[in-house]
Each structure stands twice: as structure tokens, then as C-alpha cells.
Length: 359
Image 1 (tube, rainbow, N blue to C red):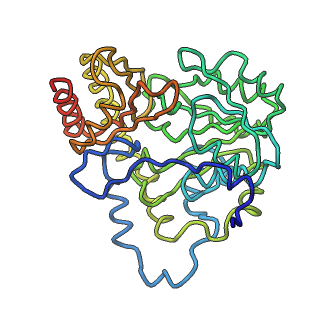
Image 2 (image 1 turned 120 degrees about the vertical axis):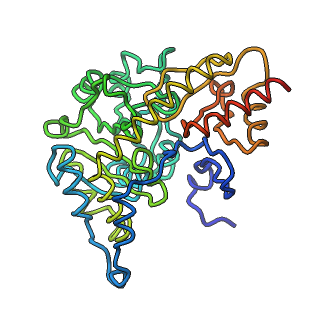
């Protein structure tokens, strides 16, 4: 006998990346930052007063919200702090999606979106990306014709790393009749010369919200801290009505605030990742991989026509304690998604690939 709701019973859950406990593993499968949090975070942790844990944490994380608002030149009313970016996504569904509502996404996209839609009893409209991994020209029209309630785009895109231009995001904000969620979990790794930036949209567009995460750019995946930047009319009901009370513990609030205030250290790590991304991209191409240009901290690499399959490489690398991501789905089953690691980690990956090719 099952007590689950019928839609929960029928659905498949989210498939997360493998999390090996062995520290010797070269872990390039879940897009974590290869560099640790900065000295400001270490100091904040060392100075944390343990006796304060007997009390509930600040309910709204206002210290963090104030710091984030100043960083992004928006109002505090435009910021909501959440338990990772995933809590923001769940809040959007809980707050704005009714049973049977249409949620428009690209195909492929972040695989948690359809899972959350199924939980809420919403329907997913998957719009295939163009052959160059960009949005089709009629994406907004397609979403509007389906009466989509929310439209989700990842930028830079996952799993390709492709960047949607600022002009395209601005056009979507104007043309869409739905809420537009721009998932910017990987935004910190965009090359500065691309001059990407759309956050000013939240002042004038009631339908726009951006997702940010401290997991990638700030090396804080272990504390699960994210935030949303959106028009106040979107932020307010999530902040005051559907958000869990005391959703963020006191330690994570203090560490997250220290992290975003230390922009000097963060930007140094982003620059290191971009440099390593460029070198790894070139090295994979030299080995016959077709590698998409990426503005994220990972590369999507199609395996050479001659040689082991993507699945065989994934298994072979794992046997050598090198973890990458393989998606066993149509359209992705000839590709590996590889997180950009430190130069030593990237060298270990390349050596392991060479070993498999020689074998």
C-alpha cells in the first residue's frame, strides 16, 4: 500500500551527481569550485560565537540581503536568501504555480525543473534548443501560445555552457506573458569581455527574477546558500508567505555574507577558472573531442568518432578515480560534461584519457 500522492508515486526523482567520500578522487562531475572559500570566510567561521546557536537565526537573513543588494545595486526588497538556489526554484513553484499550469523550459536544461513541476502537478513544455545550443527565435511566442505561467532559462546554459546574450534576456522580459526565471548559477565565470548583465530589469519588469548561487562562484556548495534577485512583487510573497520560517541557519548566513563582501578573492578564483577552462578546452580538442565554447565552469565535450564511447570513457575514468558526468539520454549520450578543476586536476583527467585511448 502506498500513501504517496498519485503524481508523486508515478514520477522519478532528481538524479544527483555522485559524491564520493574518498578525498583522492579527482571530482569533476558536479561543477564545484576547485578553490576553497577565501580568508574572509575562514575568519568568519573562526570568529563565530557558538553560544549564539541556542537562539533562532535571523529570520530574513537581512545582513546578507543588505550586502547582496549593495553588490548588485538593487533594493533590499529585491533580494530573497534561500537554502541553495534549489529552494528558490521550489518557492517559485509553491507560490506561483497551480495544478495544471504550464512551465516552459528549454530542452535540454537543468533536470530539477521538471521534477519540481511534477511535484506541484504542473505541466512542462520543453522547447528544443537550436542546433547551436541557443534559444530558438520563437521561444517567447511558443511559451505565450501555450499560456505558460513560468518560463525558466539557464544562463550560462547547462549543460552546454552557452551564453544567452543580454539583449535576448531583455527581449524575453518584454515579450513573455509569464514569470521569467533566469538561472544564473554559473554567471560568475562569464568572461568580462562579454559584458553580460541584466539585473537592472528587476526594477521595471514585474515578471523577472534571477537565481544566484554561492555554491559555484564562491566555493560554498557545502553550506547550501543561494538567493533570488527579482521585482519586489515576486519577492514579497515568497519572503513573507511561502518561505520556511528560519530557512537559513546562523552559520551559513555569516559565512555567505563574508563571502560576497570579499569580491577581491572571489574574482581572483573566477579568473583562475576561466584560464584553466581555456587550457582544458584546447587540450580536449587536441585529443579529438568536439568541445563547445563555454562561459561556465564546465565543458561539454563530444567524444571522437573513433575510440571509446562517452559511456565507456566515463566508466574508464571512474576506474582511475576521475569522476565526470555522463547523461545517458538521447542527444547527450555521446558527450561528457567535465567540470574545470585546478591545473593539477585537469592534468590528471587528461592523463587518464590518454591512458584509455592508448589502451
